[in-house]
Length: 155
Ligand SMILES: [Zn+2]
Ligand SMILES: [Zn+2]
Image (cartoon, rainbow, N blue to C red; front, side, top):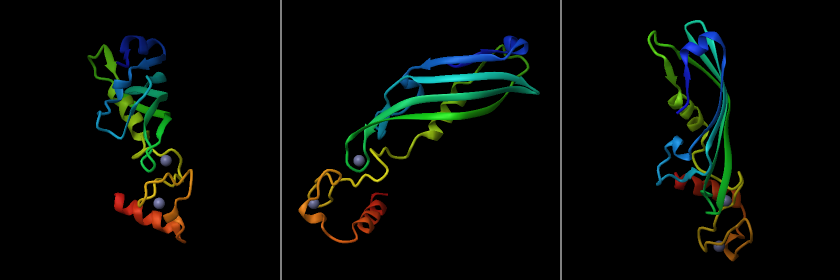
């Protein structure tokens, strides 16, 4: 849980640095990738009029298969410029900002994981990895266009 004490915040800004287990992100096992590291955060909470301002960054490594060629991929995802206003309820002693931080990281996650932006994927006809070799059937001109068509079908 990522939380801070309101009484302490009234005296001084609070530095929150630490890590949460990979499960913190709540990615389901059926998702195209999973969290492969702890979720590390480095935040500063300051008192501002009417509430608290949370700023800082949060990062996690995700792992899965490339959405085109199925190669294993690991990538660090970072929410670098977190700036969140948190309203402080009158009576609260501690404020839990886990959900707020979790949402910030989820925003940075890609729809699909690619080993590289221009991954050529697998040949739809013979299954060859087109990043490594040209198969017999990929010699058709206008290959890039063909891939654009294929991407539309995958949606
Ligand atoms: Zn790939
Ligand atoms: Zn082929």
